[in-house]
Length: 478
Image (cartoon, rainbow, N blue to C red; front, side):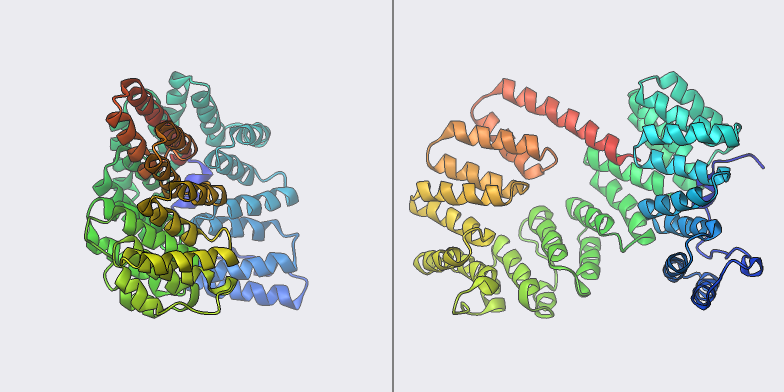
């Protein structure tokens, strides 16, 4: 059989893992260690990766000096997609046994995955002393050559590895990155799609394709790839959010609703609820809202219910927000400031401006940086002509939430209402520099440049978008 990188051998392991035969080695010295090892054996026999991981974590905490246990923990972490945890586990194993070439090879490959090529190069040099023919050395050198811009050497390294192991995931990534660097993105996509035909569960190929399709705005393809990633690791919140965004942007509303229900039906954290509903507010087609949103909202109380009410306000259904939260809660205090701010916004959107302004003011008297209150009052003050205070509120909001593109746009709108056109451009350019991936900021800035006939600014924006897109793709590709 052709010699392959250790990473290839680990990542194609079946979900039913096999416990190493350690029971006769006399490794455990305590009753607790023996108990946790028995739990580990039971979990592996049942194909329960999470249970096996929990048992091994308990085992190595009880008895830290058995290298084999750390290696097995690292393998399980790899299968679960926890690459940081895997690196830590293999690093512990390496500290206990510096002669294990497979452990060093895995550390080098994980360093590549983390983008730490200097560390990978150090590990490769150590590996060269232990196993000079190990293909991981060629792999690391290929990535180092790629970073230096020597595409010919990097390509030669990838081809050498793939001749020995045609389906090696990380070698395929190296080859795809070479093709991307050579200006052949379609060939890179074809290579990675071919890899999925050979190894359907290849997480590296799936993540690379996801990054490419998202950077291209090919949302149907991004949805297809993200769906497979979600099937492999549905508990990863980043994957579920990427799938939801792709599904919404490709108008695959059934899939979007299914993913959202899965996220929101459990005891989801407040920030996860805000993020999920925020994607619906931003990317769902006009007049389309999350199905069963009212039913889902009624399952929750407190801040989680407030998040749903905030969503209803954002999508133009303030009556639903008011129905969900009821009348203002008095006396007003920090604990209910967010709830009352959302109620005030529902009032403003239903034309009850005086009541809304009064309640916004009361909220901000208790909590001066309350975001929904600042956001709602600034927008309302623009409508009433009090642009000076609208700008002040928006500026306070941006200071408190500098990474929110919508808040930067609100500040630009306040400047526009005040007739301060230069401040509008400056605000949006600053926002774009800080958040180049935010589609709302890009669209707002582009609109301003087009409306003012700034052709040079448009060209600069296009160049910077392409540069930033390439940079983001490079980071997400592996």
